Length: 235
Ligand SMILES: C[S@@+](CC[C@H](N)C(=O)[O-])C[C@H]1O[C@@H](n2cnc3c(N)ncnc32)[C@H](O)[C@@H]1O
Image (cartoon, rainbow, N blue to C red; front, top):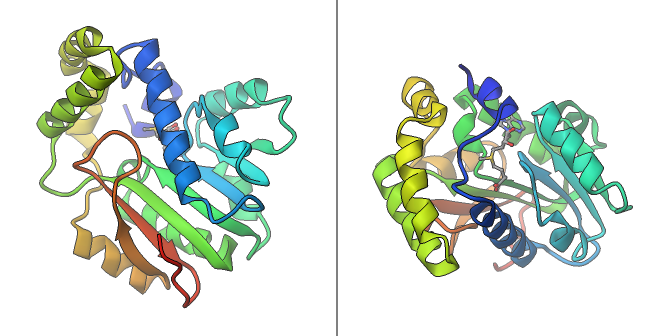
């Protein structure tokens, strides 16, 4: 099984509906905190189910939800059919957006599933789409030394704080036998240490820095803000 096949099927990442709901709400609120302003045109790249995308759409002018999985895009299109400022698009449509028209691109918990060359290609396209003052937010980046055990510990903390500790415990047992674990073992995940990814972003034409905290629940992972132009707003 490839990552693309994994994402096309029923994923085992979430231990319960509550986990999935609070995950997407947390991510949406964290994305809103990164927005440059209410008139921003935003791409959420590798958005997944984006169950709380309405929170982002209410805080910006236009939201493109971009995901490589067709079934995910169909569910997004159905869920947000009534929202004039949300569009579900494929990566090929992202690549066709006019150059220099996007204020923020966020990729949360996505780049680990790309190859190094796919990530480089994504950076090239992202830089082209951003306005000179635009920003790329790359989040939930996995440091090289972090593995499944630390991820499990972070999940348990998130579960304890959000009332799904029991299901998280049984979910972790299930995930040990899951296809996610097998694909993760076989294909691996793209990981970086902080200096490596900052260097790559610089080589790709961005002015970048690490942002604290990370987007989402996992404090062991990292978020980076990368600006397409020279000026680096605070944040
Ligand atoms: C772990 S989920 C992350 C979803 C969401 N961003 C979040 O924060 O929960 C990864 C998502 O990235 C999508 N994806 C994987 N590879 C991709 C690619 N090359 N281009 C666009 N989306 C991709 C998958 O279909 C999946 O929905």
